[in-house]
Length: 396
Image (cartoon, rainbow, N blue to C red; front, side, top):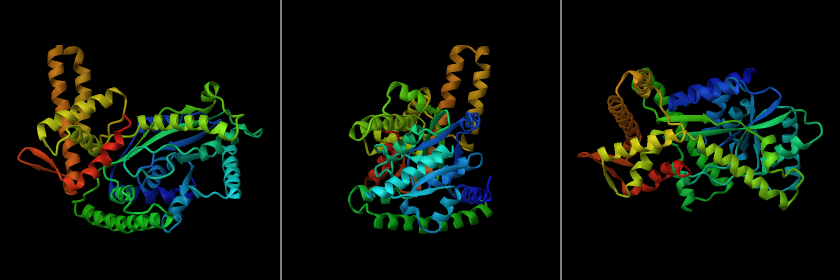
């Protein structure tokens, strides 16, 4: 890797590990190394936080050089320097000048035809309510048009779905305030929000560094990335070929393609303890829930999502759980079915309890939920924040 990629990787690694417990889908990340060399790789991601760029860059830059499309709001120090070191380029979203769009289109055509791996946040901006936003199709269109040009020499373009999620999105309250109209969404207010993030984040890293030295480090839960199955543009166009269409006739099939990619991203968005706990609690439609009942609800949701193939985030705190599950599977043929089922239920109970414990470490410290006499209560002033995290799973 180039030296500036190595510098960015080191900065991202230190920063992220001081703030979060990082869980990366290593199984599918390793499979990306086996992708054909004669294809262009485009990583399509959801957008949860300003930290997404750092997390995604850190996750991929160790083995893959990638060029990210980043909003122009990030052209401030130190983010501009950091993102450029990951190979990012900056996009003016909503800028209507035709010349600008023509230059951007030709730049994307150039890097696509050169085979450079790319990263796109398909929603085009941060979610204000935690749900996935409708896909933006402009950059997708430019990439697809590049593949139609005569000097495009690669066999295919592979779109790789990437799901990103956090136990604690540091700017969640600012995003909710924008949704409510308490803050405007213009460039100025984006910069205000970003400055607050930049003012808030570095002191946290410094504080956690000293806590780390003293053995008392407190993090903001999990930050996780997972990958889906690479999607072939060539195969998709065999079913819905819109390459010869122009203008309004091209927009609808492009939107279908964008929605298809977004749905594939949704399948691999990591399910963190805070998100699944928020979902479980709100499903009761009550401001107070018995702890035992909440554990059982979390257990059912974990089972449901796992059966559907959605990734549950389990870091070092769940190592014992994974070892017990593996041990049970190995011994399954030697145990009576009734005994195996009882033991499996006990392990799943412990997994759900650990999930709730980790979630309450975050939600309790933020005074969103609190435990009293075996009941978990919701702070009514914080209901919208809890809904924000539950909404991360609303598409499932």
